[in-house]
Length: 303
Image 1 (cartoon, helix red, strand yellow):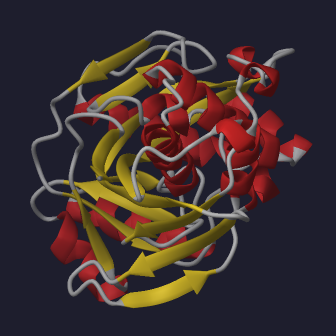
Image 2: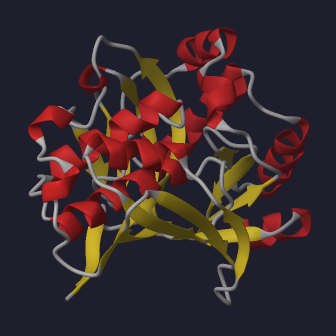
């Protein structure tokens, strides 16, 4: 990835449009193993998950000073239900590419609940900022910037790589350039239930937790959706991360014959099959999810 010294200074970076918007899918991680290397390109995770359309939209405007607003909107009527007035990872990304900008990110899923939203926000911001300021970054460079910011703030390991494309993913190596197998076979309803936030840094910075995660990791890629849920559930059980609320929800799904596992990393579960939404509904708000066909993309650069 280019270093910041290879980018022109801020004073020469003229906006190409009043604003630009981009979107990135989110990601459900079923199981993972951390990989630590000497550079961001060699650091990340291997594992498997499902890329989901419910991610993040980022709108970027030129500004004299960088500021970031994070909005969560109701999935049905679009009203704003939560606002956060900063995002250190996004601010770090903009600093790395040498621009000052005002950014608003919007999502419809709970933040910090294992949906890969930090990765999606970073990737969408990189795509939009690239278009707005005419940076001429390649898609790989955009992803590298987002991945580096994720690692710097311990908000994720492999979600950025997954979100560069769609489908059910199996990441074979660390970093955004590593091989990823993608299958587009998620055809039945997919949904999730959240019991509260589980900030990724709490787990990713815990040596004991990472040792259990590494020991629980199943080698290889799942052959189909059913095997994906089987391997993910086995990983969740062996990882020691299951909370009492998750345990109860998983037990109810098991009794109904519904495939389900814990969101990694989040205090919730995701389930698959025609009966899944109705089975989970008595336990709380159910979020309907949809597999993504593709990765991050530019939506608009207004002239």
